[in-house]
Length: 346
Image (cartoon, rainbow, N blue to C red; front, side, top):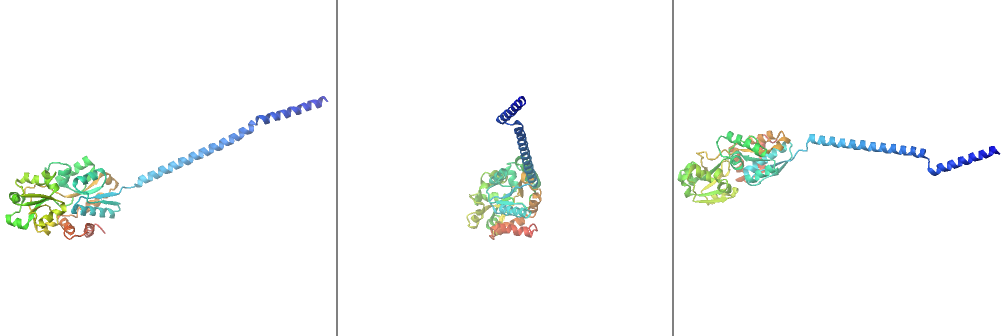
């Protein structure tokens, strides 16, 4: 029985141990399960980290590729508010488009002040400007020479340093300011030069434009003529919109008119352009003015625009202006036909 008693006690002890383990939980099994779960979580976290890292690398690679290929800006071509500026701007736009450059047109902006503000702010990327206008009216510098190269070099240097604008090669044409009179007036007073005209101006009516008798007067307008030649005290001075001033002559309301040497209306209205015998007015060659960031984005833009400018002589500019102003052809059609004729457009 002694043996049986101890066996029974052992059995009871075993049962009690099992009950205690069941009540407290088996740490060994739990630890194993937790370890497995932790390993799985760690693996998941590692996988997620690897995926995120891969995504970041892919995004970086895409960004690098995009930067390398470059989402280049649209080139916005602008112009001032008269025929020649619009014609030349359209030529620029057509040539750029043929070169594969995306273009937007913003023509007929207005005066030089408006065009200059637009390009410095980035509202436009390029527009044609005259070297004389750039010198006197934008930079407000004193003319020291009538040599076209001297004027261009000075303007190009100052535009770059002050505005971060590149002025490309000027056209061979020269659309200088001037004064034209009717053939009848020229014959009556025997007028050939501005010196001649200065002496009889007090007997004549003058059709001007705002810039010529306004803020620009003393630099390249009526005020400058009075300083250089004396006289020029017209009997009557009226200011007209640029496209309307020749109508005053046609209607008999004026005897003399502000003229630019490439105006088609000079020949069409049988007018006589007075020679600037004292070289009062500086050269007015148009040249492409381009923002530096656009030049950097399109290394070929210089060659494209210079090729257009090189084709425009004074005689050709006068003919082109006449087609629009006298023959009433559309400026885009005239510009396109000219570029095809000159071999720039295919």
